[in-house]
Structure formats: C-alpha cells, structure tokens
Length: 295
Image 1 (tube, rainbow, N blue to C red):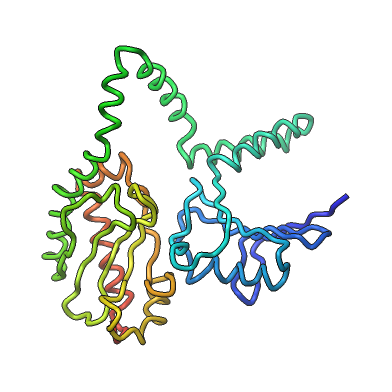
Image 2: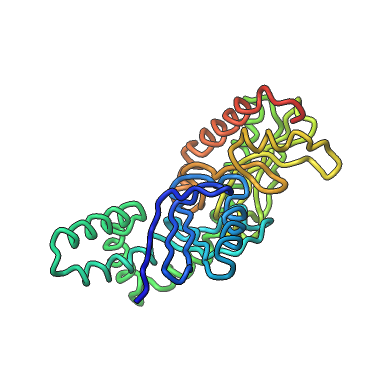
C-alpha cells in the first residue's frame, strides 16, 4: 500500500510551490494554485525544472485555476503542465469525497461547505438552476430559430462593442494620460493573440499592451512589450520585476476582474467600467516604472 504526503508552501531553490504531494514511490504532484493572482516570472518553467531534477519523469505539474485557464506564459515558454479547474475537477472530486464521508458528519459537512464555496466562486449555485430553467425554455420549438440566430451573431456583437465603443474609450484614455492609442478596428473575437496597445511619448523602447492569450477574448494580460526587435532591452529584468511577472520577452500580469470577455465584460465596456479599469492599470504601470531608466 502506498503512503502519501502533502506539503503546503514547499520551498525550493526555484521558488515556493503552493502544494506538493508525494508518495512512497517518490512520485509527485506539483500544484500551482491560482485564484485571482498573476503568474510570477517563468513560474511554471522554474517549477518544471525543479520537478525534473528531483523526480525525473515521475511527476506532474498541475496549474489549478477556477475555470481551468491556460497560463499566460505558456505561449512562449512551452512548459509541460496540466490545466485543472475548481469548477469541474475539484468539485467532482469533492462530491465523491462527500459520498465516502457519509458516516463522518463533521468531515462531510466541512466538505459540503467547501464545495458550496467553490460553487459560489464559479457561479454554479443559483446560476446553474436559472440556466437550466432558461435552457429548458429555449429548447422549445418556438424559440429555436431565435436561439441560433443570436448564437451566430454573438461574435459580431462583441466586435461591434469593441470597435465602436471601446476603441473610442481607448482614445479618450490616450488623451487623458498623454499617450497614444494604437488599436484599430478589426475582428478581435476570432483573432489569435488579439489585443490593444499604447505608445508613451517618453518611452523609447517599450509600449503598453493588453493581449488575450486565447482566441475568443480569453486570458487577458496587461503589461509592457518591446516596440520592435532593435530596441534596447537592457532594463527588461528590472521592468519585469516592477510589473510583477512576464516571460522571456514581455512583462505582464493578469488583467483584473475581466480576464475572459463575456457578457459582464461587454456590460463593463458599455457602462464605462472597463475604461476606468484599463486607465487605472496603466496608471499603476506608470507608478511602478517611474524610477526605471531605459523604458
């Protein structure tokens, strides 16, 4: 019979793992737990290096998020890891644990409370019931034509709001902060690595950028990117440290609150909340980099 050991906040020379699970066969799970936090510089790459050195091929690196998102660093680093979600994998596991703990009331109730907490974080309690009722209604014959017409035009609606509302707001931000919006009208929804950018008059080497890591307006990050391949990037290590993360080329963090642009994000564009969020994040970048030379 195998013995298992779990450690929280396990320190290594490559950084501190959120959770490390090992067994008597010297196999391991390295878990990076991400809830409303941005990736640190080459975080998964460093943890993978640690896993190879300590466990050779006998380990798995798990990237645990609420919805099973990709790491924004994955595109360039190509680190091998598994995406795991609280909303599916962890909830299913907890449900099975609740069944097993049927004769241990305290343990069972604790698991149920934790499961309910995850459902609240991932909008699966009352929202799930409402969704089922709505789906049942929309599945009726008299609503099917409208349902498919709407679904076929969702991308057009999102692009319309971005191109005709948000881009004007980005220009307003540019005037208010004395920077230049460089974004143009296009199909943002169906383009890989879609995003927006600003040029700063006093910055010779970098632009501010926002970029979706996945097609469909998902996994939004914000930070700095070199203007081209010829600029001076000698200040990049300190820039990345000040910004709070990034990869081998860009310094960035997760965009707050609206990383995936669905209905709530579109509403935020219409009511001006998104503009304020973007403006505030740019101001934070200015504050973080105000004493850094070579930007």
